[in-house]
Amino acid sequence: MTRDELREHILKKYDGLLNPLETGVFDLMFEVKPANLTKVAQMLYDDEQLKFDFLNNIAGVDTGELFEVVYSLSSITNNLRLDLKLVLP
Image 1 (cartoon, rainbow, N blue to C red):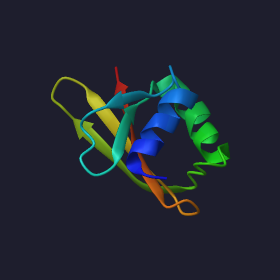
Image 2 (image 1 turned 60 degrees about the vertical axis):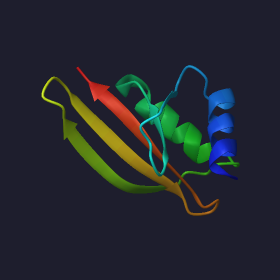
Image 3 (image 1 turned 180 degrees about the horizontal axis):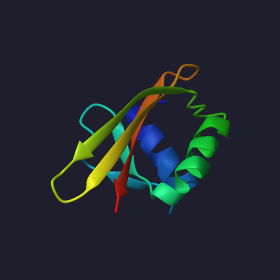
């Protein structure tokens, strides 16, 4: 699956749960609401076309006005990567 195919698959299947961001230079980045993180992570794992099964990294970002958390995920099986960003209140 190419980067564009991954983006389209996520936009169609996870509409309303994942909001695409244009800040992902190397990997696609989507914003997810903190309350939906567990649900979205389980769905990304269970989706046979994606099978995101590995957490590469968790990073905290202090913008000076708010905190963000970025989860970098991989699918070892399908050779895919993406980032999930949460904006904390």
